[in-house]
Image (cartoon, rainbow, N blue to C red; front, side):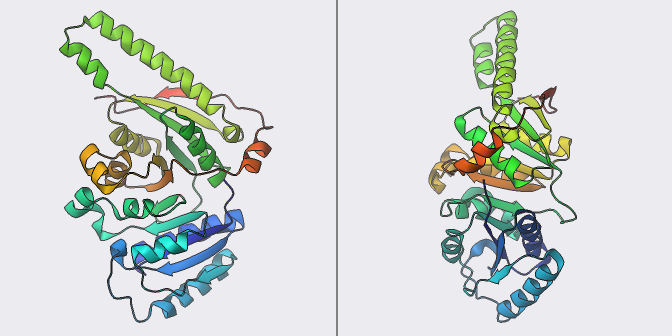
Length: 308
């Protein structure tokens, strides 16, 4: 993925301004245009701050001086979800800060503000929670071995080519539970578990051989249990500053009834999270250029949190 422009949305709080700093650091890495926009907490219909444009001008000047990037202030100060989504149509990456809604019951049952944005925005969305001291050094990518997973690995590689990328997959233990319920022998269950793990290792090797992973130091981890919970645990275990997870553009109702991995990751993770739409297109020229680079060995290692 080639990043030409980034939109950073802030409520002008210290937490919100972390999004601007992270976006500025990424813009400096990629030589991208940085756009800065004000939005109230939760992207609601709250009255915009009277001094929003004045404060944005100050932030833009500081960011330009510190990171030497081209900065543009977005004139629209309404800050509603629709306004943010409209502006995000013209950028390659949207970066937002943390909001107070994150841990509330309303956030869990009515979806996280980032998920509400994701249903209306075509580009990846980065939730910036961590203080910005340096570039991403470790990136964890939650994969499910579909073609979309390769896309997410490529995106993680293109985000920062010097970062260590770790691929993580959690084996679903639901079928194993059904075998026990059906009184299948413990020996047969162990055989099934062994075959599942072997298949996962083979698929992980296939995935790590993707073109854009070739310049990275790539490691792999396989866990067992709920993918959202295990991915968050692995992020903490690996000290990964960023967790990359895919998200289909489902409706709020389907997410509420069927559950959403992305929603639970946003709820549980304490680090940065990159939400990648499954229909995202990667620049084919970028893929072709990376395809000529040799592949490093993949070190598969166990993950913590192996309980169902």
